[in-house]
Structures are given as structure tokens and as C-alpha cells.
Length: 64
Image (cartoon, rainbow, N blue to C red; front, side, top):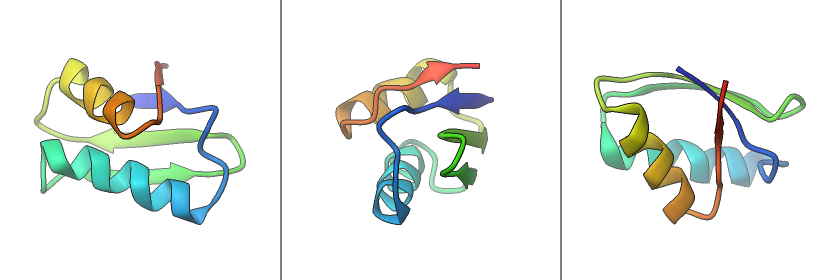
């Protein structure tokens, strides 16, 4: 699944986003592209769970 996160602008943001996703699925594979504000996620967790974790971490995401 892929997400667009407008508020992700730096390496610290990328780490926080990755940590939020991995709080739902520790084995999730997360690929962050800061310039385009996109995150590619390979996970067994539901899309809703990932979106909720990102929202809770302060990074509202749009599903792409």
C-alpha cells in the first residue's frame, strides 16, 4: 500500500512515520521518499490500522 503524507518533510519525520507503522506491524517493510512525501508499505496489518497509527503519530496520510 502507498500513502501520501504532506507533513513528512525531513529524516526525523521519516523515522517517526516508520516507527508509527512498525508499531502496528513490527515486520512491516517501509520505504520513504521524502521529496515526494510518499511512503510505500508492505505489511500484514490492515490499511485502516496503518492510517490510524499515522494519524495518532501526527502524520495524517492519504491513501494512494
